[in-house]
Image (tube, rainbow over all chains, first blue to last red; front, side, top):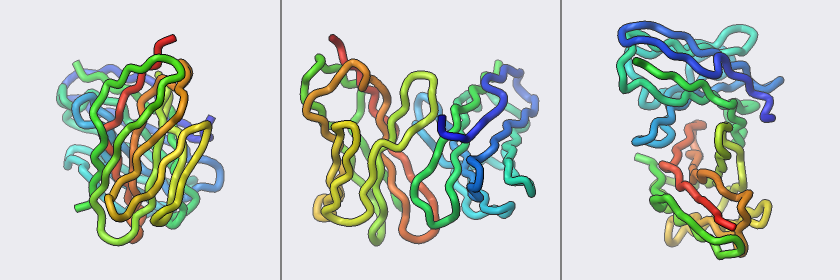
Length: 113
Length: 112
């Protein structure tokens, strides 16, 4: 158990809908990363937050957004969903921005029908 | 930009066989290098890491050496077990900022 929790575990929704994925980092970790894992593209970095502020942006679509709250949990919002958004979404956390070991949550499997 | 390329899978080996999974990287400066493992139905777990050239990371019988001259970080294990069946990801962390880049993963199946 990495100490990183993600909810829900599974999510099934329809095209055009909006969903919110939630992540709670390990106790004491200030930085949260979001990744998308799809069969054809491997693990893609989406976005990083540190202590409530956005720190780095990867291949995140404009339809996707994220935030980190004062209690350090983070939410990833996916809107106008398309079939191609079906994937596993992972959250990872680190103590700060200089720590190089990430701890991953179990992931949320999103299926868009 | 920075990137990681790892050998395509899937890889199927018999128990006690020797394992090599190739990984090469492109990065400016001196990134840290990692191998993560993902068991079925779980998130990624750090397997080993190396932070500078010629460092060897090792864990659970796996090892990888940071080779600056060949920009490689190949994963090896002398004798694989059925329990090693998983997907293995090579990754790098830039030395500026804290962004990570992952390879596409290599699926390993070990048969008894």
